Length: 331
Length: 267
Image (cartoon, rainbow over all chains, first blue to last red; front, side, top):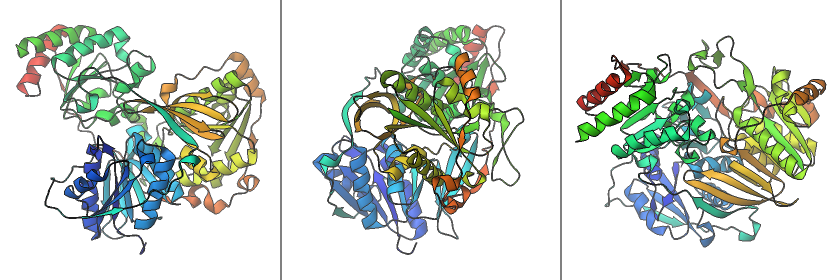
């Protein structure tokens, strides 16, 4: 342990800037580094990403490692894992944090096994144990029905943090830090599994992750036609439509709007849960919503244990009247 | 194609949330009576991916399951769906492992199987939701891996095309074989066992491999090989302060709800 020092945060880049999860991780990492009395370092991997290094400093990094290589333009798992393995071997951090994102959940286990250590994915809380000075990792388990606090004996201690689980520090342009370039040292010819095409789904209207209001439906909606009615309320409130897993599995609505443990994790101001039982797996994706409103005909449905307001009734009768009244109130 | 699928027996994740409790020591999940054991749902989808590949290219599907007290009617389900062989890593020494010690034992078993073109795993098991065993097996075996797949097609004996789910669409990955692929629910519903399949599975006895059979050091598997320690297990307290808005008719409730939301300044 003596050789492993400090906290290293992997910063994802979106459109040449730090992604929101990166700033959240820096906020969380800073707190851990302070509790350890050690440095916070960031690592940025990509092509043409040098500008984001300065941004990472303004969000709290003391040092930023930059691996900039044309071969790293897109996320290629093997290259990114190799680059991160190299940086981790150079930095020897005690704690290494990544985001629980498309990249993080793929990259982290690769890295943990390559570094002959271990990782805990999808943490909602991270802290330093006052006595052992080890990283404590709190993670929902059993589909969110329980939570576990883990720690580990091998270094670096690696964890991924769920989006919105930590807050970024206030950006400070006056902060100073050091930028260190690291050569990628990868061999493009050695790539075994290669991303050959990326297909982005076009989103009409507001993105689910950015929406302040989300109108979500569950198994009770019954068909694709039903989701059109949810859309109407969502549009009215300038929000987005979401779903639990069954409607996605049944193709009533696109997979990309699945909210839950293995779908999207969102934290809107207002969340309508309609015809949706409120399984732990689903709640994992929306329990951070400020206000949850449930409409369900089953008064025993778990969603009423999660919601702030509820109507017990058939959504087919409740929703049109609700939409009409909301429209009237909006004038 | 030689196809391997790893499946895990878990408590039914669809059981009501109230059936999951924590034991007095705060170290294990205690289940209410009557909660069935099932194959972890993503692992069933991994079996489905294997069956689709076998239908397209022919071959043999070997299923491996690691654990203790493996109920034969549960772990035989992949056989009744159409898989060919079942190997059980069933021994106390394998129990209560973490992602590391579990991947280590499964990788050793797969090495013993010898020839394989594709290994399918579920993206994560529904009990610990760790999401690392599949990738770990690939890293230990030194083969490429593709995670969170919704579609798998073998291009030929040496290459495959995999569609993986991302937060805003899909990525198409071409990989050399052998490779490991973790499967997500976007692949589609797993098939039901057929009556014929159930009859066949009844007659088939699984092979049971003990740690010595796969040449692993008992200190590196199961609880002894754990690198992640559980300090505490608990259940979040739910406030459960839902204000139920009633009315004579559903329409009246809805109207009152809108007014209440406006009053509470959430609308």
